[in-house]
Length: 402
Image (cartoon, rainbow, N blue to C red; front, side, top):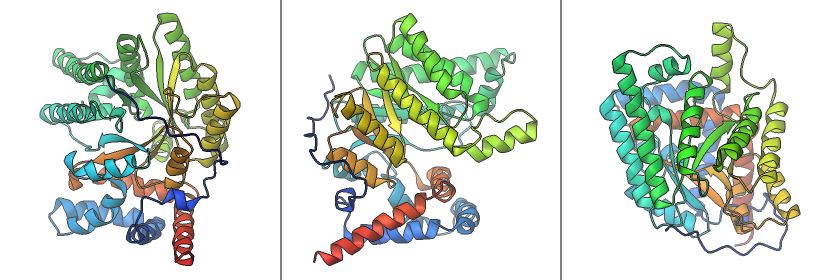
């Protein structure tokens, strides 16, 4: 059976996300300098908007820019091209008691052979994680295992042809294989969220998997995007259903990643946008979801997937107020590799459970993910400037201490 890392002693110092010495202790001077120039580069909305698709095109037509991408944006946000490539990054995080979530980030496939290969690769991440307490989670995107067009039909409750019925059954079998493998190895598994026009079917599948595998503890986690105005209610409804049906709820709380696309599609097709009216509403629901999960910790295990300092502080402070052990197995913080190290490493130093999403895959195939990361950094207010200010502060601190 998989065991957790020995608990990190809970820090007696007040938690501070401004401590750059702790935040960047895993980074060399060269790493910091490279990160500085990368975030400086992607702080330009125009450059990201124009440069990202051009880089994608250049890769696909064979222009020799793969080496540049590998040494810059890929190095910052990805662990490597294969599981084996990720070993150094996994070990580096583990040295500071930060866990890894191996995230096979290949997107845009649309044939059965590709879906089978993605399933096999996810199973390989589970095999790699087995018996390794540094990798407590597996993760998958449902659209990596089946056609988006089919998910839309199922989501809209349209009639499927016999061949589509068989195709959908194969998708569910792939998902079940992953969840069953995690159950058998005592590994936790995160089902990532998708667009609203396919999300209902994934919520249904996630509940089915939780009913099947979360009888003794939460193994399967569904994702709740709180930038949607209906997802706090969904979380509560799923909890009460879990209570009635006798299983444990696994919940990953995020704000969300598809706001612009969701709003544009809603306007184009003439239906009410599922997105919150403003950021304050998203923040309110995200923080309310944290409190709800803490109030029902006997039946909910949850991950706060956030780069937001206020929400991270709220969860840490609430755990202290309620005398919940920092390393409680039902609570995790999570951030993306290459971002918000001031949260990840300071939380870990204080003894909280922290995991980093570590994307990996062939550079060409991972480009859609990398483009989203660049766009996210420019669209989230203050994200890039915050990263830059912290990196600058640490560079100055190191110079002064020499």
